[in-house]
Amino acid sequence: MFLENTVNYKEQFGWIEVICGSMFSGKTEELIRRLKRAQFAKQNVEIFKPAVDIRYDDEMVVSHDSNQIRSTPVPAAANIRILADTCDVIGIDEAQFFDDEIVSVCNDLANKGIRVIVAGLDMDFKGNPFGPMPALMATAEYVTKVHAVCTRTGNLAQFSYRKSKKDDLVLLGETDEYEPLSRGAFYKAMLKEKVKQIDVKDSQEIPSKKETPNKDQKSDE
Image 1 (cartoon, helix red, strand yellow):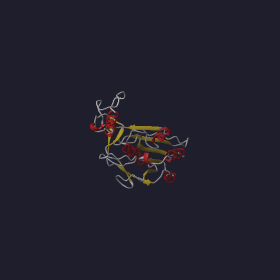
Image 2: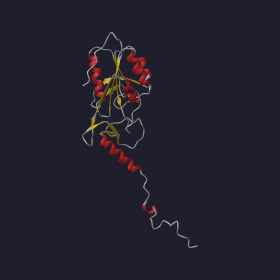
Image 3: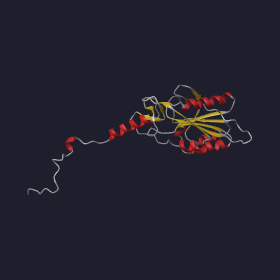
Image 4: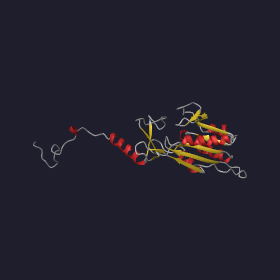
């Protein structure tokens, strides 16, 4: 379990914590846990989420287990810099949906002495690094990778497999749209999709060896 860093008041610098993993791995749950501990300590806490995330609530950050905490939806990362200036602790959920400016925003806030806690998907549904998350993980002091349980093998899952055929990079959804898979299960599922996409001709369209004319054969004419 992550334990909060002891604040060095002489240095007057904050830090960045990143919580990453697949869907259903408990990222938001861990974010809420850390933020509520800070609130209990009477610290000035503000939580932000992208305005596009309205799956459970327009304003609340809600985990899959229905734990929730009030947040401020913002359309762009630049808004966070303006609204978070007087806070002790900042929480940012679904960071992968923000623009690339979220990286400089988090670093600027940390340099001002603010503790910044970020949660987000580290990979998209194709298994590729997702948005600004790699840069956030690289510049953070602390990175916590959480895992779900693979629905097909029972092993640790780090991939978010999309069950629907939609190809949009940003597609908000739940268990009807996604399932967490282990490396082996994800590889097999993606391979199965590729096989389905192969355009196989009908057997009647494929000429047999007997029907294929011999180049050396002279014409009857």
